Length: 85
Image (cartoon, rainbow, N blue to C red; front, side, top):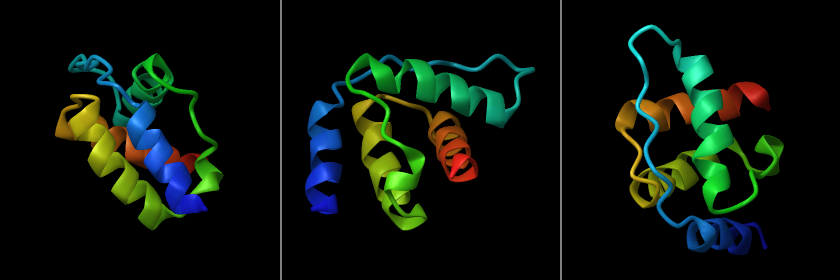
């Protein structure tokens, strides 16, 4: 069932624009910003506790490609999600 949810997230995510960070923002703040704006462009933000850290690693790998996120943005979002759990 969880795999179906992960696949649904992949299908619903439709290429949110990248949110390039300014040089003075921390990764935590940037991750929160990308999570709040870019992810919500195409789907509701899932509860971070809905998936394990390993599942989030896979989800973010795919969402980075689909959402056209930079490596830094994807790592920041992943760190934010894991800290929010």
